[in-house]
Amino acid sequence: MEDGPLKEWLDSRDRSQLRRNLSILSSASTIFGFADTCLAASRLVMKGHFPSLEDLESCCSRLKECDESFSLNTTGVSLSMYDKLLTKEAL
Image 1 (tube, rainbow, N blue to C red):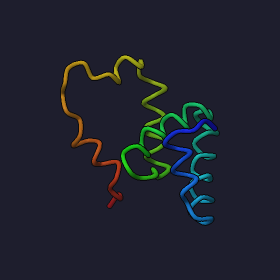
Image 2: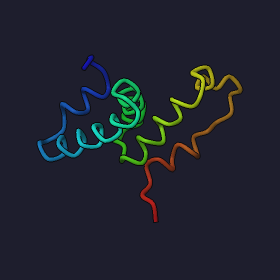
Image 3: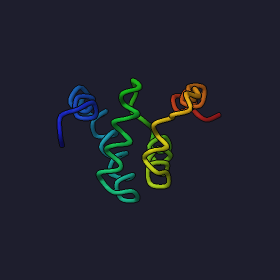
């Protein structure tokens, strides 16, 4: 794995956290592939938390389904209120 936010995050975890985080990465990789899973996880980790499996699957799905140019948000519309949903537990 290349150096970057995801590797740094994983390197900073204790043994039980690392096992749980790698399990999440493995589950998502089975569905979406390792490269897309790592890219999605890196983007979520840069926001300050390791994603749940559901967060990671959602981001991976968005990467698979959307053209990369859509991620640039050339309209300037703030989607931050939706990003906050990724850090909340479902009720």
